[in-house]
Amino acid sequence: MEERLAAIGLLLRWEGSVSNARLRELYQLHFTHASRLIAAYRDAFPESVVEDRSRKRFVPRLPQVPAASSETGRLADYVRLLQRTGAAPAGMVLLQADAAEVEPHIFAPVQQAIRFQTGLEVEYRSMRNPEPHSRTVFPHACVQTQGRWHMRAYCAKTASFRDFVLGRVSAVAPTPAPCPVGVESDRAWHTQVELVIEPHRALPKAQMDVVRFERFHKASAMVRTERAALAPYVLHELRVAVDIAHQNPPDYLLMLRNPQRHRSWLLGDVESTQWYAPAFVDG
Image (cartoon, rainbow, N blue to C red):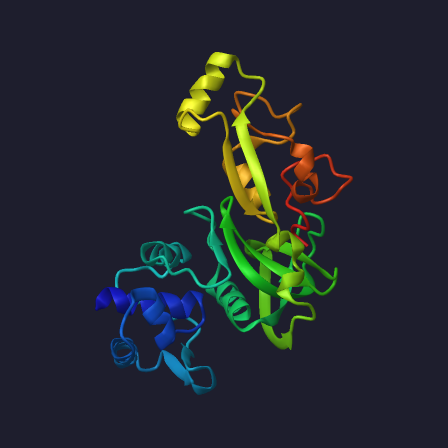
């Protein structure tokens, strides 16, 4: 019981709400058992939640949700809960087990916007535009990778789908306006690309054989099918060279076959010479 009460606290803190349906998804509970669990949490923390009847859920009343156990309530605890239960919310992709901490007042509104398909006014800064500035975004996915959390969102300013690093968001306010374009318009998200990964061509044959034995179970190459928007992150996680002339062993033991075929997905700017910059990344 204590563990599940702690889980409710994590859901309230990081998803911004808890519902009977979400608990049933998380723990495969009967409707009645999920209702009793929510009632037990409300009894334990009577001032912590308020009912939102229009959406059949409970939302935090207090800025900081109280901890129900020794769980600290950090984002890493929330991710571990999702990994244990295999119940990540729709629109969330976990590519790495440990990522930089993001504050609940930033993370939870993003989850709510994804769930209810609404927008956010965010104060954002990026490497291209380091001064804090306002953006109206409509997120549809949240991705954990490369030690950071990203949201995939339609940006009203650029009229395009882009990746935004949550750690660079300093303020967020919900807006009820729906996204002006459908999620199906995010071509990079819905396009599947086939990545053929093989030993780096600069390796001696004996070392290529070692790589094949270790990474490919003796096969000549590894083939992965990924969303085009996520391909740069996956290749970076695996330390796969895509700029073969400059990314060499021992730093890179793997290489992408025919990288020019995927150039439009791997470069954020066609004029850029820096590979691994995800297309339309970071504002």
